[in-house]
Amino acid sequence: MAIVNYAARGERHLARLLEDQQISESNKEALLKFLKTYDVSEARRTIFFERIGPLLRCSSKVESVVHDYDRMCELFLELRQRYSTSSYGLYLSVSKRFAGWLNDGETPRAMQRIKRPSLAKSRRELSPRDMWTWEEGESTAQIEPSVQLRAMFLCQLDAGFRPSELL
Image (cartoon, rainbow, N blue to C red; front, side):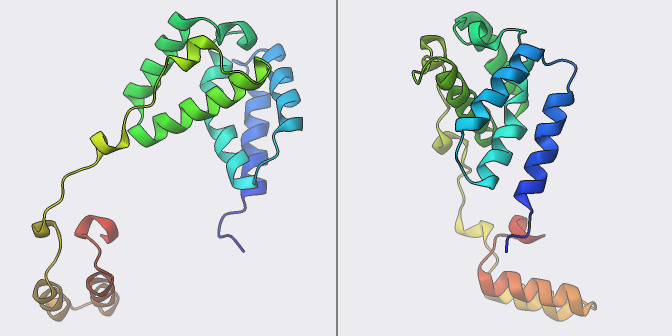
């Protein structure tokens, strides 16, 4: 069983969208029609509900705004500046999926022109110095008075985590 109850989490996010005063009734109706055909896992539905809000809020007629290149550029530039590359990519893919459904299966030309940035450019260059050596991990664990922290350091050492991945 999953640690997160995606069905309950997704329903909470959907309820928030439907209660949001900034989203027009016609956009809410379009969302509900879309959900009848959106056959994906509960985790994927939750991601969709978490990320579709900005597109629904940007206009009272989402069916027409997805064809407006200038408005889409403005919206996605704001999202790109606010979120990490991966999060921005989720906002973009969710919005394109919804816009494609609104446009009879074709992603609108205005949204086709908006591209996701390369993930390779956002990755850090890591060197062997970024990893703990076996000796550094053992010495850190030996001087640590807390049994819990000592176990954490040894787990980190054994699994080969970078310091930022566990601490």
